Length: 330
Image (cartoon, rainbow, N blue to C red; front, top):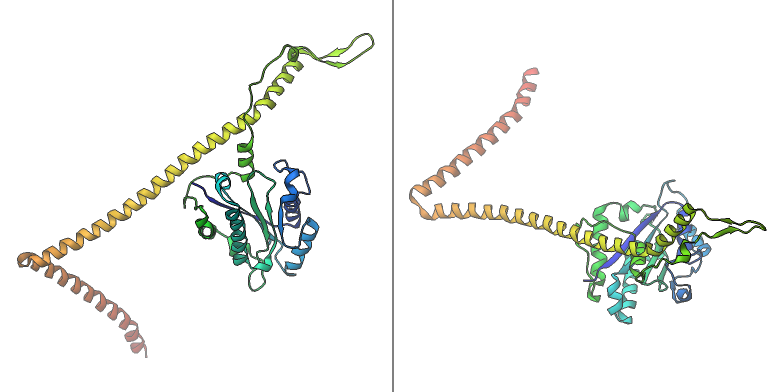
């Protein structure tokens, strides 16, 4: 089962936007990107650098705005890793085209000022920056992604836009917690770790400083620390991969809990509906039976009508009372 994935991040300062753009345009070290494949990244729009993009942003921002206004929203749009392995090039191109169209439809084409397909990472994705500007020219991220309901609706809308490509939406109302996509994929992409071997030379105290008559060597504590650090560096990738396995298991449990909660809600609704149906059936049976049963039904209907008439009469009397008081005061 492959999912459509979309993440949005608010950027409220020019410095925050610039920092994200530097990562976007690979103007600073990007450990999870293959530098040899960076030229394969596809830029949509005139900007190919942070300085150009910041110039576009300044042109789009209204002169009058709140000090705490969100200047831009950064989007990441991709799919589950397994989908990229089976999807054709045509499907992949279509995914990116529809993702960009979805953003333009939501924010207006003129407000999508940067969009790039990153092909230099293991999992391709569209990264885009938009200005949350309303039709009347105000900056308002709240109107676009201001609450969970709007964000849930966006997830549903985006998933529908690409569902015929073999993707689906995650479980709505899921209790699963979000983990940074780059961190998750980075852990999955690491190769298996080979068994580390401790060699005799690892335990030999190393010479720290050579002297003419005597050299300074490591203490036993230093040797222990060095060997511990060696094993820590060697096995850290395996520990991170194991943490992903734990996270996947936790996600499965959380999804199971979500499904159970939804099932209980459906069951409760069905029971209420069933009780209502049974009440109607009972009433119909009494009417059809006639005789004493029919008399009971008539009596109940009469009592209900009398109570309703009495309630309406009390309301009329209460309404007339102030009018009588005003007449007496004259």
